[in-house]
Image (cartoon, rainbow, N blue to C red):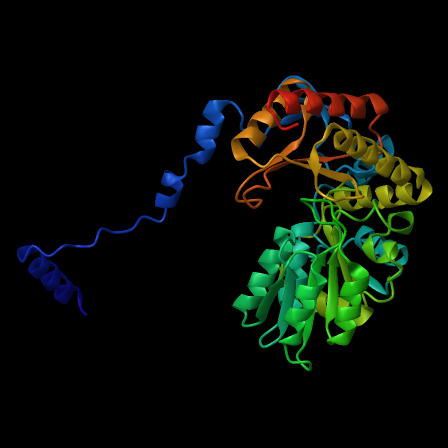
Length: 419
C-alpha cells in the first residue's frame, strides 16, 4: 500500500468513527514495573548494595560493617596478597586489556598457561577460557547442540544453562527438561527421544540456590544407556567438593566418564572469567565455532593472572577446602538445631527456607541491621513457598563470625515466628 493509500484509509477510518488502535510503547513494561520501588519504600530492598571495602569475612556496605555470609569467595582468596600482587604484576606487563578476541589479537601467553594448568588439574585433554562463566554456557551449548539435536536440562539449572539451552532451541534444536535431580524423570525424557539422536544432558554440579549435589552416578549411567553426552556446570563445585577441590566428577570418581565440565573464575578462583574442559577435539571445535568466544574480548591479563595464582594456592593449601566445609557445616548444624528448615546440602551453601516473600525480606533486613549480610531469594527466582535466605561460607570465616550468624538467625527467626 502506498503512502497516499494509507493516508486515505486513515481518513476513512476517522470519518466513520472507527477505533484506531493505540500504538504500543516498547517501554510500557518498564513504566509498569513498580515492585522494586515499592520494596525500597518499605526499607527491605536487599539488592545492589554497594560494597565499599572488602576484606573477606567482614565487609563495609553503606558505612555499615557486616559479616559477609552471602559471597561466593569460597576459599577467601579475593583479598589474598599473593592473588592481588599477581594481578598487579600482570597489569604492569600486559596492560589492562588484551584489546581483542582470543580468535584474533586477544590471546596472551597467560591464557595458554592457565588453560594448560586447568587441563592438568581436571585431568582432561584440553581447556578453553571464556570472558565470563555465564558466557561459557552460551559458548558451549548452542555451538554443540544444533538443528534436530537434543538438549536435556535439569529444571533447576543455573540461568546460564537455561538461556544457552533456549538459544539452541531457537536454532531449531529440541529442548527437553526433567524434574530437578530426578533421575527417574530424566529416564522418562530420554526414553521418548530416538536412541540414535545426538543429545546432551546439561546439569549443575552443585545447584546454586540450594547447594544440592547432582546425582551424577545415576545421571552418568542413564547417559551411557541412552547415548547422551554430559555437560556439568561446576561453578559452585570447584574448590568445594572432589579430590583437592576438583569438582563433581572427582567427587564421584567419574573424571573419565564426564564429557564436558564448565565453570567460572568468579568464585573459588577469586577473579572473573569462565572455562570449559573436555576432549581436545571438542575444545578445538568450540575454539573455531563458538560466537561467544570469537566475537568477545578475551579475559583481561589481571583476571587470568589472579585465577592462575588462586589455582596454585588451592593446590598448595588444600586445608582451605577442609576448613570451608567445616565452616558451612558448623552453621548448618546450628540452624538445624534451632528448628530452621534447610535445603539438603553438604556444600558451602546453606539455604534457609522462610516460605513467605514479605517475611523473607523483613528477615533479611533484621540480619543486615544486626551486622550479617545474606542473600534473599524471592519470586520469581524461586517457587512460591520456597522463598529463602541463602547463605554461603568461606574458609576464612572464624568461629565467632559463624556463631554470630547463627545467633542473629535465632533472634530474627523467633521475632518473626519462623522458629
